[in-house]
Length: 84
Image (tube, rainbow, N blue to C red; front, side, top):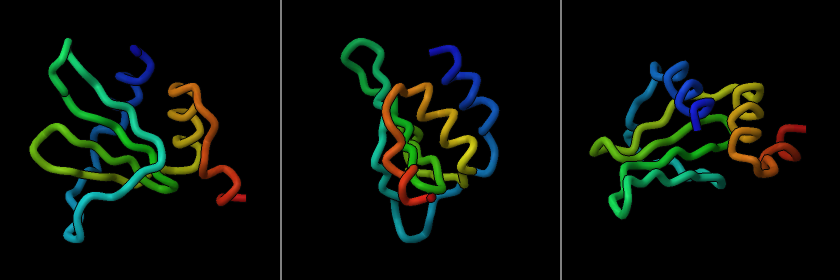
Protein backbone atom coordinates (compact mmCIF):
# COMPACT_ATOMS: atom_id res chain seq x y z
CA UNK A 1 0.00 0.00 0.00
CA UNK A 2 2.87 2.39 0.75
CA UNK A 3 4.23 1.90 -2.78
CA UNK A 4 0.85 2.86 -4.24
CA UNK A 5 0.69 6.00 -2.08
CA UNK A 6 4.22 6.94 -3.18
CA UNK A 7 3.26 6.35 -6.82
CA UNK A 8 0.13 8.51 -6.42
CA UNK A 9 2.10 11.31 -4.80
CA UNK A 10 4.65 11.23 -7.64
CA UNK A 11 1.78 11.59 -10.13
CA UNK A 12 -0.12 14.33 -8.30
CA UNK A 13 0.08 16.86 -11.13
CA UNK A 14 -1.58 16.95 -14.54
CA UNK A 15 -5.06 15.92 -13.41
CA UNK A 16 -7.99 17.41 -15.32
CA UNK A 17 -11.70 16.71 -15.56
CA UNK A 18 -12.43 15.84 -19.21
CA UNK A 19 -15.25 17.89 -20.77
CA UNK A 20 -16.72 14.65 -22.19
CA UNK A 21 -17.07 12.98 -18.79
CA UNK A 22 -15.31 10.24 -16.84
CA UNK A 23 -12.82 8.00 -18.62
CA UNK A 24 -13.37 4.26 -18.30
CA UNK A 25 -10.53 2.04 -17.15
CA UNK A 26 -10.39 -1.75 -17.28
CA UNK A 27 -8.50 -1.93 -13.98
CA UNK A 28 -9.75 -0.10 -10.91
CA UNK A 29 -8.91 -0.18 -7.19
CA UNK A 30 -11.51 1.04 -4.71
CA UNK A 31 -10.38 2.52 -1.39
CA UNK A 32 -12.39 2.32 1.83
CA UNK A 33 -12.06 3.35 5.46
CA UNK A 34 -14.20 0.68 7.09
CA UNK A 35 -17.48 0.82 5.18
CA UNK A 36 -16.92 4.37 3.90
CA UNK A 37 -15.90 4.72 0.25
CA UNK A 38 -12.94 7.10 -0.08
CA UNK A 39 -12.36 6.95 -3.83
CA UNK A 40 -10.77 4.87 -6.53
CA UNK A 41 -7.86 4.75 -8.92
CA UNK A 42 -8.39 3.51 -12.46
CA UNK A 43 -5.66 2.45 -14.87
CA UNK A 44 -6.41 2.90 -18.57
CA UNK A 45 -4.27 2.28 -21.61
CA UNK A 46 -2.77 5.80 -21.52
CA UNK A 47 -4.31 7.42 -18.44
CA UNK A 48 -5.03 7.24 -14.73
CA UNK A 49 -8.52 8.13 -13.52
CA UNK A 50 -9.82 8.83 -10.03
CA UNK A 51 -12.99 9.37 -8.09
CA UNK A 52 -13.56 10.68 -4.62
CA UNK A 53 -12.91 14.41 -4.73
CA UNK A 54 -16.27 15.40 -6.17
CA UNK A 55 -15.13 15.00 -9.77
CA UNK A 56 -13.75 12.29 -12.04
CA UNK A 57 -10.33 13.60 -13.09
CA UNK A 58 -7.80 11.79 -15.24
CA UNK A 59 -4.17 12.35 -16.23
CA UNK A 60 -1.82 10.97 -18.89
CA UNK A 61 0.10 7.79 -18.05
CA UNK A 62 3.16 6.42 -19.84
CA UNK A 63 3.45 2.72 -20.68
CA UNK A 64 6.36 2.42 -18.22
CA UNK A 65 4.32 3.96 -15.38
CA UNK A 66 1.34 1.79 -16.29
CA UNK A 67 3.56 -1.29 -15.96
CA UNK A 68 4.68 -0.11 -12.51
CA UNK A 69 1.16 0.46 -11.19
CA UNK A 70 -0.11 -2.82 -12.68
CA UNK A 71 2.69 -4.64 -10.87
CA UNK A 72 1.63 -2.95 -7.62
CA UNK A 73 -1.96 -4.05 -8.26
CA UNK A 74 -0.68 -7.58 -8.83
CA UNK A 75 -2.83 -8.26 -11.88
CA UNK A 76 -2.00 -8.83 -15.56
CA UNK A 77 -2.00 -5.71 -17.71
CA UNK A 78 -5.05 -5.97 -20.01
CA UNK A 79 -3.53 -3.28 -22.23
CA UNK A 80 -0.16 -4.99 -22.75
CA UNK A 81 -1.27 -6.75 -25.97
CA UNK A 82 -2.84 -3.58 -27.34
CA UNK A 83 0.45 -1.73 -26.86
CA UNK A 84 2.48 -4.34 -28.79
